[in-house]
Image 1 (tube, rainbow, N blue to C red):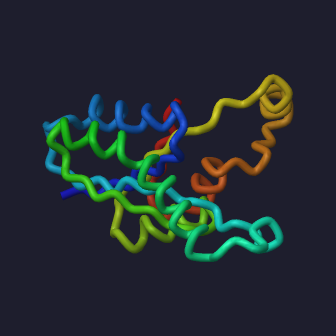
Image 2: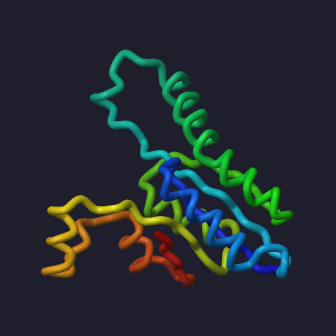
Length: 147
């Protein structure tokens, strides 16, 4: 059974990931999808005076909100789903979780670029360190970036 890691960030573009999986695979193939939300670890200087547990709980809550709609959409399409929320650098976390879960494919969305960044990418090919670009370069498995 193919295993897919669907990396979602809670934005509108993330719903494209679920749409892609359902449209591309639907119920025609038995597969298991790990829906991952990677929350960046907060910087210590920004969270001074706030209990670590409160920060962790809030990030977990945000992560579960980000995975809930995608998970529900895939379950409606009768696709086996496992939601997962992790804290850490998003690109590193996506790659690590794909390895841990034994995934054959990573599917993620790319944020839309503003006019300045679009011009920079178009004219120079520089991706400005986007998470999607980092995952594409560093992952050991195939990566699909949907828009």
